[in-house]
Amino acid sequence: MHWPELTEGVLIKRYKRFLADIDFNGQVETVHCPNPGAMTGLKDPGMRVWCSTSDNPNRKLKKTLEIVEADGTLVGINTNLPNKLTHEALTNQVIPAFAEYPVITPEFTYEKGTRFDFKLATENDAPPLMLEVKNVHLARPDGPNPRGMEFPDSVTARGAKHLNILAEIARSGGKAAMLYVIQRGDGEYFTLADDIDPNYAEAFIAARKAGVAIHAWQCHIDLNTIEISTELPVRYQ
Image (cartoon, rainbow, N blue to C red; front, side, top):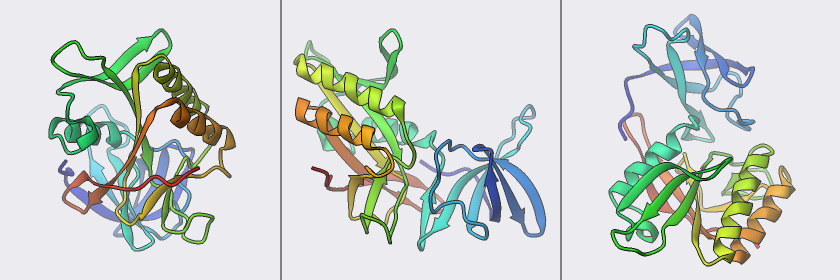
């Protein structure tokens, strides 16, 4: 995926979850921050950032925070991107585990109150695969998992619910998978931040034992493009 034109700035502060004040060469502007998580290590004042600009006349905040430079690398913080990146990777058969599924249905309603990011199907009568995608950008170099890319960065009851339903699908003989899309390129492996959300970790363990396939793929990111590029090993339990 190609980025739209990006404008470099310096982060002053991120606040109220979806707002950030950015200094663009002496001009301070409030921008949209498309990330409801904690953004641990990605919201320190003085960090270099890059923002896209919308041409939608109805938008109050014209700019959107897209990239933060942290730990010497570029990190995508827009949590709306992983599904778009995944759709692109599925279409181009980048991820071997899903290459046998040419029929891609985004935002699939599995049952009332439960929607998965994708339903993947073959062109015959083989059972479809339910796929849920999660955004990853947490790295704590001095934390419990150095060089590891961690999920989640805040408590996610919704994430645990999805794991539980995927586990039910797998136990009943269906196909289910989790894909963790890592919006940075400096990781060596994927793991869980179980100190942040132990309930999610429990659901993850149960889902994996039930047969839910777990995949973690890291993105190549620069100021021109971002794309899913490299599989990382999953190291947890």
